[in-house]
Image (cartoon, rainbow, N blue to C red):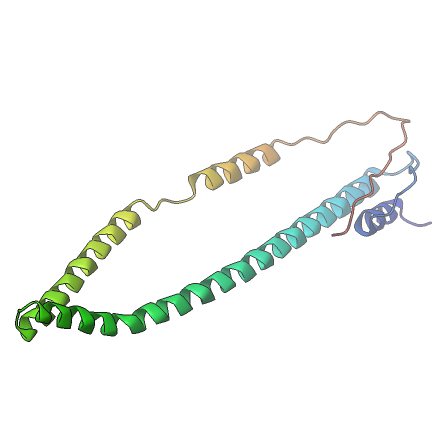
Length: 164
């Protein structure tokens, strides 16, 4: 005799419609069927998460490459702009050494401001409290789950799902 729970699990995994199964299944078969369906659900959820993450990683990689290229060009322009600024100040009548000192000091002031801003932002970083609370709430709910009572004599009908 074939196992009806296995047929239900196979049908859920493949997305086919299953005809109602007789009510003569044992508790073991029902538990096996529920376990197989839960396993298929978890596998489907993991596959969906992987697909979403792959798409986000691709977008992030493209954005990271673009910002890296922009940073390299900005870095290459700094010496040219520094010399231009220093020689521009020198043309106003200040000595060349003082002109370069002023440009170098301006860069140090900008670096200090950026470092201060970075420290302020790092101090505001906190753990993902909402996600942690949600995970704890889900775990608490799942600990108190009781099986849903079914009426005896009423046929069980499986729901078809996609296998995406």
